[in-house]
Length: 116
Length: 115
Image (cartoon, rainbow over all chains, first blue to last red):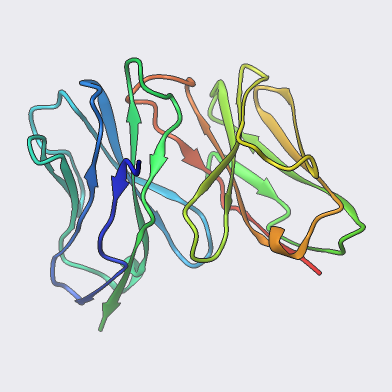
């Protein structure tokens, strides 16, 4: 069963606007971590942001924030003030902490294109 | 500058060649990973090493042979590959193998083309 679902294969946003990339996950483990990565066309997977299942507040890192809705099992990435350099593939991932597989699970990714 | 470096960045090899991909991490991590990323396919985990011991071999064909001589270095030896093995190969590392907060850090990847 797929544990990470990214339903948007492609997204477009105007420069300087905000964009939300969706991610839903499935786990019965009470301890888990959620991660977002950015992959430009060069290939490198760049770690952006982390949210732990016990964290009370949504994670933020500069222009990136994670809209964590535990009851809905969603962990959407919000990019504020989009820049042309934000054009890339974005991957959501999960790592279970107790009893679950230690192997992290990745979604299929969302392609983001930022228009000038 | 990335804490995980991969060489070569690009490799073209014939089906009868033998080549190797190299990965080095400068983060003091204990776990290292090889992933394969093909066009329009999800990221595929190939191998996992923890403290130089292989803990996962995800049904990878024997034409791919990993080697982890120490906790900082990871190799992927390639021989008798097929054109469908052409892909981006990503090396990664994390502080430990388990733990929900263990972030995986990736290298820049090695683009492999098999002709």
